Image (cartoon, rainbow, N blue to C red):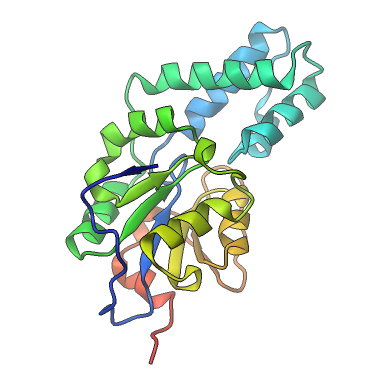
Length: 233
């Protein structure tokens, strides 16, 4: 887990109950879901098992173990889960080398959190090497630290990544807002006891108690995030 020079302690004086914002990476802050799909579909096509778009919602959000098991099951490709996982990750990393587009509203939101001193952490199921590449576009200075999928015992949809991030910030999970784009990430955040702001990218996410759904990060600002966590008296 890497740490930047950003603040690593919650804002005790926040007028709301908000202590920290925890943000997913792929599909939430950066438009890499297309990269994952290209990596997966091109590799399966090379193996003689092309995928059509109907499979896309089923592979968004990881974790990789679930994705490769699904792809092998639906295609019958003559490859092991380990081989397919390595191949997909290699192609994804190659695609990242050309630069990563940010989702609309992402840079403005990160700058607002940083300017207002609100602790923020990046929490992703992606591997460390990929996060470090993406950080060149996102700006590591906008985050207290990042948590990678290969740095926790159990990644999303388990609660571990978000529990680790909250603990490192000294924040209560219930006073953290998690920004996610996939059902897998939402399950992880909710299992950790966090409030969720969902910005769906490919798969549909419905509103639910403790969960708010918006169409774009362009609708998200600090005022909205603060409104989601009741003030403590």
